[in-house]
Length: 331
Image (cartoon, rainbow, N blue to C red; front, top):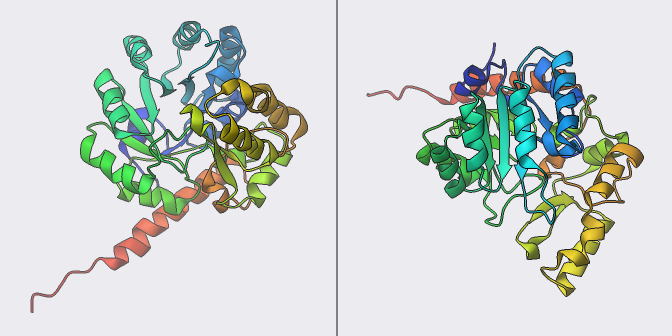
């Protein structure tokens, strides 16, 4: 059996499971593996150092799979913002059909993408932002709950409330993002009105994830209590692995709140890259991961993970839930 939803139909994928954008993880090799397994793989644009590097990565992904894949473009505050316009042009020129936007107001870029015929998935953490994205022309909303890795916003609202709220107020399809790692959560997301799920951290702990094994093992060993929040005083909160550098960031923020220069040496993206790509040492950088660690206990292939999730979700929907419904006698 398969789970057919508005998302699978719109995106042309077999299973309603999306691999979200992730810095220093979302390369062509992982995106292609997810897409080949029936989900939607995603290349992270800004992990590539230049727009031309992104062009090469898109072409590599197309060589590895003929199935749909997406490109993520995250708009975040930066002292030296990247050349977003050039990245956007490369995505359009290379004929990518699906894009995931995230971060700050994507209106300018949604307009460009839609004019070029792309499907736009916008990831956001609050209903006001979701409604804005819908009004701007987004086709799908990825509802990112407080459980997520990376930037959960400043409202601290989890998916148990965000998803049914999205079902009430949105007119376009949405997926559940943040804290998702197994088939029971996929079934729950569908029950709450979502058309599928978006996963990041769970896909980091797969055979094909292009990161060092030490990071994958940290995710397997970690529990749901092994993340923490940094950069709260900057109003740019990030959920990260609870380790020595992250705790040092919190210590500095407590003494010197709101000063990015005092923690820049610790939150550097280059430190992050070295941990993931070179050393595999989970205790030498500030790196993003979600509370879903508590549900990760193995490192399967993307195909095994996706098929396992679908089988579990189908079993819950067809057996456990349907068995709870009975016709009440009128006698």
